[in-house]
Length: 192
Ligand code: URA
Ligand code: SF4
Image: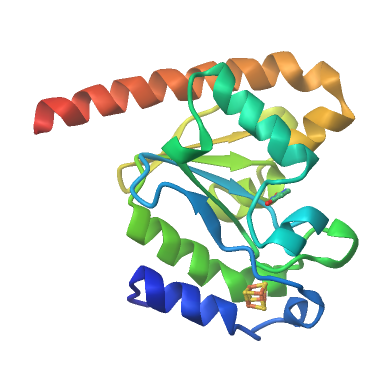
């Protein structure tokens, strides 16, 4: 699919490609800088996101903002999206069918943003973008490269809210992400 932003947003707003369309208040497409070097991908909208039509604005989103701030980044420096654009009931994990229906939109988003780095927040994003067998506890914090895009999986902020003992590992991932960001943005400057 070839898209521009307006066409993409228009199509998603009217999308009925999977059953999640029946229950949504709003589609939740993306937020932040459409030219960001770093893209963050979550799972799908929760209740607050569904009500506001903006990704990561509930409790997990507030933690995400703090995590970004800890490495001197804000929401305006990154582009944030999810695997599915409509809220799964009770925040369940999107089914294969739902994710497959929705993923072309995420691919169109990163084709338009062209980030240097993609951070997968949690297993759903990581399995769809990095490896279907990926397990966060085992495989987080490892860099992968696909077509010159650097990808990493880390804990979803909602997982950190449930289990604070994961925070040191999340912090080490964040620092690794910040180092990669500095490294890539430095080398991009030399190209100009
Ligand atoms: N969790 C997600 O994965 N995405 C959101 O947008 C909010 C919570
Ligand atoms: Fe369409 Fe994605 Fe919403 Fe399903 S979740 S209806 S594919 S926008």
